[in-house]
Image (cartoon, rainbow, N blue to C red; front, side, top):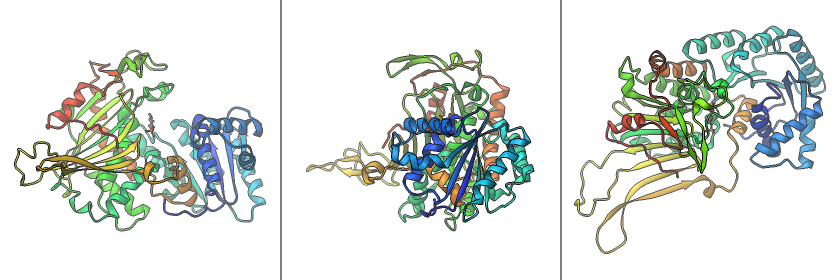
Length: 500
Ligand code: BG6
């Protein structure tokens, strides 16, 4: 995120090369970086997978992925012909040492003819249980010994709870230096998320009021319209608390709540985020039931189509207790935020897809205008919208046009797509460019991941000990269970639903 320069030559090795993530996200991202001239002057991508593919078959598969999923649409022949030769495939068994020997030989054969020794980027686009064995094999093979030139990229989920995350961190940091490990949270690659740092720390306007004195509460909504689709096998053992709140939502919260970093460096920024995670109050025992609401979608109607409930989805247990919705209330115990509630919620099969942060300010300390002209007055509010539209909306009071004095709320709107002509890069483009450039700012450090798990742990534990009795408790196409409304209404507020 810091530079616009071309990264040094790199060989990118993708474990899970024939999988969905590679096809939908990684290769389209590399291709767009290539078209925008952000790839290194020399690079190669090696896909590893169990299935046998000739290089040409592999390339054809990846081109289909670009055609279907790239933000630019279909690949053009001429450009594709330049890109395709950089891709190759190696059939492999990731549990077999021989595959790592073959990989090492392939890397050596490639780099032999390169002027500059390339960086090696090992991307683990594989099931979580395979991360440890692959990392161990890579360690044994000795191809990632050079700390400055080799990097490991790990996809989420990073562990399934605090203990497993700690164990995995232990294994990985036993093989790699922490600076070599890039733990991906794709939300951090989103333009609007990065813009929050600029909005807060490159303007003099907001920081002085960004605290408990002026802010009444904060809300974060990350709602989706999709159900679990074909990911039941993974999701049914996870749930929304693990899948969305522990990572994406807490990361957004960190950006809202963090103290200004001393400098724009990965360590400073991540230190400040860890401070937030550590300061989040851990609720205990039954109190958690008042601070957290869970839900699971039943059948319903989505855009005129009848859809089935979560328990009817493929690879989901018929009596599943997995949460497809979670809402929580947090407090951050520090000087800036003492007493300010942060409400967060995320769910599948909800009315709309949106990721929105609402910062609700307090009322003016003294009302100058008589209530007869100020009956519509509303406290200030800043809405930061990440999806569907990317932008910021600031609500303030204005005088309505006319001879008499009447007040009404008005909005100042900054909308990315209207302000900038350029199409924003996909999150994966930003993140992959950062990995190639060696910039870890937008990746989670081991202590950050563990701190995030420790925030959700008490809730996870209590929910597991007390299985829900009312699932499914919200209809597909709704805004989630009633318990989530009660959670925020108990404090006299309601969830804000206003995209930019
Ligand atoms: C992923 C989750 O990390 O994020 C998915 O595993 C979820 O369950 C997805 O659908 C949402 O991402 P986005 O970018 O579409 O909001």
